[in-house]
Image (cartoon, rainbow, N blue to C red):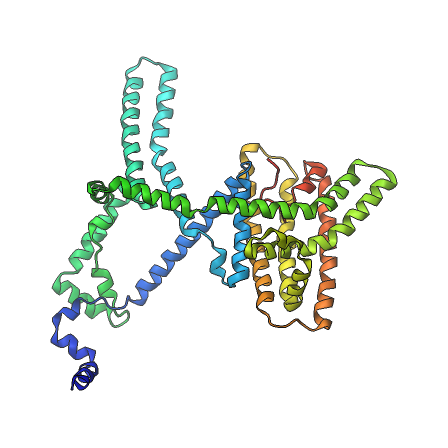
Amino acid sequence: METALVAEVVEIPLAEIALEFPIAENLSPQPSWIWRFGLFGLRQIRHLFGMVSVVLLLAVAANIPILQFLSFGYLLEVMGRMARRQRISDAMVGLRKASVLGSIVMGTWLSLLPIRLISNRWYESYLIDPDSNSTRFLAIVQFGLMIMLILHVAAALLCGGKLRYFLWPLIAPFSLAVWCARRIANWKYIRRLLVLTTDWFAPGLAHDICHATPIVDWFLPLIFLRRVWQRNCYTQTRDQVWDFVVGLRLPYYFLFGLRGFIGSFLWLLLPTMLLAGATYTTGGLAISAGVLGVLVAIPIFAALPFLQAHYAVDGCWRRFWEIGAVFQNFGRAPLSHLFALLCTLVLALPLFFLKIEAIPTELLWTLSVAFLVFTWPAKTVTGWAYGRGQRSVQSSRWWLKYPIAMTTLPISFLFVGILTLTRYVSWNGALSLFENHVFLLPAPFWQ
């Protein structure tokens, strides 16, 4: 009996339920295609902002001694995730946290812009006449503005550090106007008119327009007051900050990059010393050192990207010496590995032009931006190729993998030749060979 009743209830059409119960009108329908398209665009903007934030943060870290290993560890982590999961989203590590840090940095810089302008005006007035009324007035304005901006930045940080929180005085009039318009649109007759005029081409658009977010969820002063009035405001803020800092995993990326740097540097040490030594010697010794350095560098340059991927999969340092496992992985996906090697070396070539002429030290981080923009895709493709080999069940035919393996040698030879010639155009001379941005730190210069 109970089963029959349940069956009858289940078979009742949803449309009849909606007619019987007026409360069903308040159920949120699926967002309209226009709204979904707008939300998709906003997500892509957030992802783009996160990527820009990651590149800028890594570029700054790459030019700070010791912190350079954070950038290298991040790139190795990208390579390892691509090798394990084979999803492009895994190459975008930490975009959300980077966007938060980027919002805080940009928002704080923009918020302090008025105080910098007033300070310049005060300093100019002070140089002309320190005791003038204008100088005293600007000093008072500067002090008052400084107090206001400190409170403003502190409130934005306490509420989450989103970029719109730093800019709320500028966008508040527009946001309030939109919020009021959406509340007015929710009136009975206006909403019916919207449904009649929009549902024929965008079902659900009227609901999207009329659904106004509560003002306490986006208006910074109200968010700040609600946050301060909480009994556990200090404890909650402290825990959130701590969780955010721990979530950055800075010690992990540092040690991951340090071990990866040591393993890569040991592989490159012998050929680099031979190539550099050929510059400081003359005669037959220079020729012998140069030729031997090129011959040693060719197989190393062809295998090292995949040795790094082999290490990045699990972070075990001894993976750098498992040549056989890397070659077996190459045999299971030779075309993917060849494509990854081409991408790695081709994307590295334009970066040599950035080292021809020296620039001021304070602008070195701008060059690191370019190095990261080219290195990030190369690491991603290398991790993808290595993951393809791991997921393949059997090795490719000998007539396919061995010719492709031999093809990597002339490609590597061409790159070694270009790298060797760059010592004559780089301002660091032969020492530029030790920089090797392709396999080592994502910075163009040693700090």
